[in-house]
Image (tube, rainbow, N blue to C red):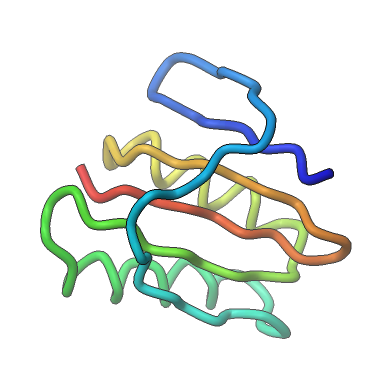
Length: 94
């Protein structure tokens, strides 16, 4: 079972089996070290419309810290799923 978390600025809500109801824009940053996953996310966000979801796939554990911190500062909603050694970030552009 995948454990999912939704991070909202200044709050942390843990939930299970969250489904994304929209087809996300996929960004594959697996095998890249930081800061590359964050830079690829920023590029996708620049192209996305408000409310669009970007799925960032990363394998670098330090990306969890960087991507979550960026999302909070930029006021984007973020959901993080860990699947084996991969991290899947569902970022909704604010």
